[in-house]
Length: 408
Ligand SMILES: Cc1cc2nc3c(=O)[nH]c(=O)nc-3n(C[C@H](O)[C@H](O)[C@H](O)COP(=O)(O)O)c2cc1C
Image (cartoon, rainbow, N blue to C red; front, side, top):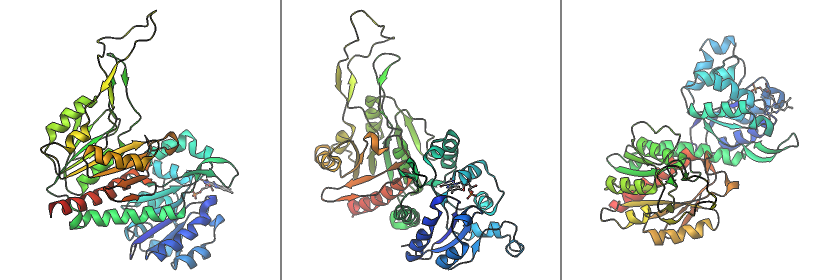
C-alpha cells in the first residue's frame, strides 16, 4: 500500500524510541523506503546498527558531516522524501520545531523541509499536559504538522495519563490514509471539479435573552476540515458556520450564522448543490420567546424556559425539491451510536450518516481526532481514530465515488 513511497523518519530520544524499530519494519513491509535520522538522544536509546539493519539504509545523525554536506545533505534529505515522519516526537523536538530551532540534524531538516510532516508525540503525561508543550502543540498544528496520538495509558515511567505513543499499527494506518487521500486528491476519478458542495459546521447558539444562550461543545473542526478537503478536490464550497474560533479555509464561501433557524434559512437559500454535508451540531430546541434585554434575578426564582423545536435542516434538505444528489448527515451520539445512525438514515431521507461517539471520554467534541462509523443504507464501515483532516480527506474520496455512482 505504500509502494515506493519515500519516508524520512526522525527518531527522537524518548523511551518509546524502541517502538520505532517495529514501525520501520511495518512501513517496509508495506513497500515504503525508509531513511532514518537519529537524534543524539535517540542513539542513547536504540543503536544506529539496529536502525541501519532494519531500514536497509545508511543512518543519518550528524549535522556537520563533511561527506554529506558536500551535497548539502540536510536539505537533500527532506527534498527526496514524500513525507517526514517523527516517531517518537519528544517534548524537546516539539519545542524546537515549534520555535524554528536548527541546532542539530533533526531540527534543521524539519525547518528546511518543504514536505508534509507527521509526528507521533510520546512523553510523560505531566510533560504532555504542561502549558509549554500544549502551546507548542497548537503552533505545530497551525503550521500544518499532522499529529497522531498520544494515547491515554500507562507510560514507562510508571504514571498514568495521556502521553503514550500511539499504537504502531495506528501510526502505520495514518500514513497509509495520508498517502491514500493525497493520491486520491490528485486522481481524476476523485476530483470534485465543477461540483458544488454545501457544508454546515460548528454549534448553534439559541438565545435565552440578549446576553445568554444555549449552545453545545462542537468546535466546527470536522466540518471545516471537510470544507478544506472538498476545496482541494476542486469543488465550489459553501460553508455555513455556527460560531467558532476557526479560520475558514481559503477559497471557501463562508456564511456565518448563530441560530439553527438562521442556519436553516441559509442552507435552503444555498440550494441547489451537488452534495450537502450536515456536519453542524444544530440545537434541537430553542427558547420560544427570548427576552429582549437581560433577565434579572427575581424572588420568584429562576425563569421558566419554554423550549420549542428547531427546523430539522437535514430532513428538510433530504426531501427538498432541489435535493442534492448526495445528502450526508452526521450523528453525534453518546450511546447506541450505529443503531441510532441507522434509524436516522431512514427518518431524515439522507444517503449516508457519519456517526461519532461524542461522550465525554471519547474526546471527539472539540478534539482533533475522530473515530467515525460510516453508516450506509446496507453496510457500516468503522474507521479507527485518526486526525479530523484525514477523516475529511477520506470522506471526500468516498463522496466523490458515491456522486459518480449517482450520476451514472
Ligand atoms: C530515560 C529517559 C527517558 C526519556 N523519555 C522521554 C520521553 O519519553 N519523551 C520525551 O519527550 N523526552 C524523554 N526524555 C528526555 C529526552 O531524552 C531529552 O529531552 C532529550 O534532550 C531529547 O532529545 P531529542 O529531542 O533531540 O531527541 C527521556 C530522558 C531519559 C533520560
